[in-house]
Length: 386
Ligand SMILES: NC(=O)c1ccc[n+]([C@@H]2O[C@H](COP(=O)([O-])OP(=O)(O)OC[C@H]3O[C@@H](n4cnc5c(N)ncnc54)[C@H](OP(=O)(O)O)[C@@H]3O)[C@@H](O)[C@H]2O)c1
Image: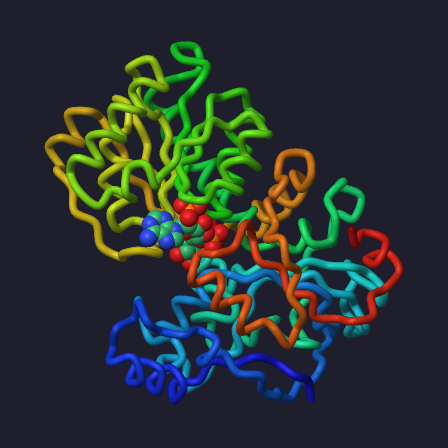
């Protein structure tokens, strides 16, 4: 048995009833409960893990709110969330070759690659029978693991911030750049204007843009996160100055500012993981031939746009999800070299995980939330604790 957090449909329903279905009032910490779970029996290709550190991921928020789908209900009444972890290998099945006891590994969350490697489902979310890593131990298939890049220059908390967000950003980048280059080769335009809106994935997307020599712009409501990115050469834009695009005039002001910052050109690549009011602002700020990519729908699933206008400006909207397995490996190579995530100032304990996720929901954190699961750490991981 292991201790593991779960989200049950009873708790989702009770919390929604308590707030009269007003999702803005939901207390996420009342929906995520410390539970117990029987570990799966070890198969020949399985690995037994001791979970060391995890990060707060936004799909847990969606699971607790049941705002996109009621995933706990669809999965038979309960899910065990958590799809990003740093862990120590405790034991391996007889056919496992890539890992051995004592290795420090990362999990990824591609639950079920399609024939081209793209995930049909996400681990610990909609993948049937998958259990997540907001737990003290886990048994997973070896294909679900990557060696942790302990020498990459990041500390343990920074490494723990990346297993889900970095591959997502990497995939968004590959798609956005590739699509733009189909339309406008580097020979015609070497330096691009790249815009991202608040959130850990967008921040990493912009770090990729900077690393490739492009001009990057981060539009966020958080002064701490804007400051952190400015230190990496990414131009900050205060989203609060445009009232988070509440009215048409706010969007107009934002378009004017985007044009000013880019010498009248606009944004060639836009990463929008939020949708809702952010979508219209991102689309309007796009340059001709621009590409708007998204793998998220934090504020709204649905978007509405003027197709004729997008055609005339040659704008492409692209929808992506998580990376392929090969892409996960490549994204991991960029830890520290390109990806330098911003971490929330408090590192939470395992018992504080519900509070960490509630504070993520309230948007009061100064960076990505990290939860330390293991009290005692193996030496190689302990050496990376700041
Ligand atoms: N498909 C995938 O593989 C995948 C992977 C990762 C994430 N996602 C999804 O992508 C979304 C973002 O994830 P993330 O990890 O980047 O998020 P995150 O690091 O948790 O950040 C969320 C951001 O949302 C912004 N925000 C909150 N309320 C807002 C509002 N009312 N208006 C505008 N912005 C607001 C905040 O930015 P400010 O700085 O402006 O306050 C905050 O930094 C989530 O929906 C998540 O589920 C999908």
